[in-house]
Amino acid sequence: MNTLNDPEPFVGSFVSVHSFKDAIQSYRRSQLISSSYRVVSSSYAGPPFRTDDEMRQTEENDDDLLTSQPYGPPDTSDNDLDWDGGSRVISGVPIPRSSNVNVKRVEDHRTSFRGPVKVDERTSLLSRVTEEAPAPLVSGRQSACVLTKSVSVATGQSTFCQTLFNATALMVGIGMLSEPLAFSYAGWIGGTLIIASYGFVTCYTAKFLASIVISDSSVRSYADIGQRAFGARSVPFVNFLFCFETLSVGVVLVTLYADSLSAIVPAFSSNAYKILGLFILTPAAFLPLSFLSYTSLVGIVSTVFLVAVIFIDGFSKFDAPGSLWSPAETSLRISNLQELGLAFGLFMAGFGAHAALPSLARDMAEPHRFSEAMNYSFCFATTVYAVIGSAGYLMFGTDVSDEVSQNLLQVPGYSPTLNRLALWMLVLTPLTKFPLTTRPLNLALECLLGLDNYTSDDSEVDQKPSAILAFKFNRSLKRILIACERITLVCLAVSVSILVPNFGSIMAVLGSFTVFLLCVIGPITAKMTLQRKVTVVDATILMVSTVMAMWGTVAAFRSTTS
Image (tube, rainbow, N blue to C red; front, top):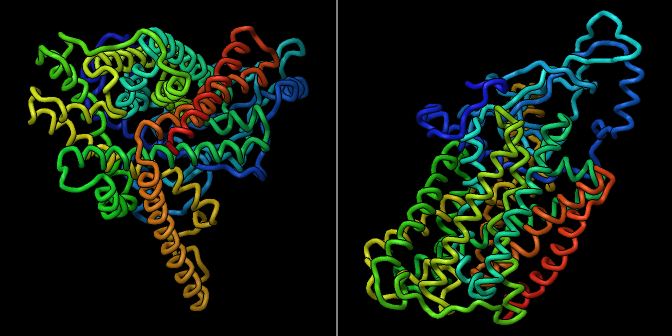
């Protein structure tokens, strides 16, 4: 394992630097992170975030040498990944320290009183620490002129390459299916400028969010950053955005599954397949994360395979439509303002990974290199989106579907076997990703309904017969209510998908509303608040992104009713 003083070079493969198993485990941790953020309480009663002035005052009044250990990344054992299996106490405290965490002693000017807390796999990434333990005191006095504290800084487990892969895997996915449609709405000039600017701005805000998490051990997640910047009043709004985003992505996955299956087997309508999906997605909502974190690898394989199929089809056909040798009719300019607003959301939808990126930074073995990883990751994601969008637009022009995969079976001259295989993978991908994607919303609803605070170990209950009977009844009742809640959420996602069947409209709403707020407007506003200054760059980004978000949101919601 490389240390902070011996940085791992970028050039190389996962296999040559670390074992393939380590890479898989790192990916599974990223899936745990992305599927575990949960609502936090606005009435949080734990220790508040300290301002910079309070920290300086503490340092001036403290003459003792203290040693503290911030919390580390999540454990990667199979038990921790299995959120529905085994005996455990459901808790709302942060993820546990791993026994394999790297520790480096550094000199710091901050006093910390936090100690490790034991929790389980149901732990929420958005929850705050409520348990404190004083750090051991070291005898001796410090100079009146210089006060130095020795701090043990915990680092994560993921290497530079693993973090780069995980961040890229969180971004590059189903969002690329609507990139050709976005180019057809914005034209070549507008589309190129929009996607390039989005890549730069979202990378800029991602690095800021990570810098807060890395520099302050009391901040562990996206929600903590919002709470520190805007106070407890921001919690309900952040919770709403997380829940709305999760539900929207769930609806998108249901639509993608049904549309792809309907294209392969057109005997039934897309809505019929959505209803059929209820009988597949409902049991999947109860599968353990230890299983789903492996099945989610199907999404990566599907993405790579679809990219390959698009270019194989494009170069194997020499006449329009569907050929890269003989491009379809395209336009340099914007078609109309309504479609430009939709393009704002469609392009932005692919960059919505910021909710999990701060926790990925916490899980990195070399956190000082996270900004470098983000540069590579966002550059790669932007390039992939631009290339797929350009290829799809060249092949199908203004006739491109809101899911470019739908065009593959409509054009004669392509390999039907290859294209059917690509679409079958798009059928399987939503089925494997839906339980992971909607898990945060499940946990949020269970938290709000008070279903997350029961113990499954009857050894902790008073052994009186009446107490044991009451405990078993309450446990069974809560399990039934959790099952009802998860089934209801699946039904809700399917119902919304039937009511709003247009894939592009849902993606536009997702991008214009939640992704703009969570990935651009929110981080920039938090940066201004925490740093107490407004730069020209930040002000420009905030103003332009606000206009684009409002414009895109109105256009997206109008498209859902048309």
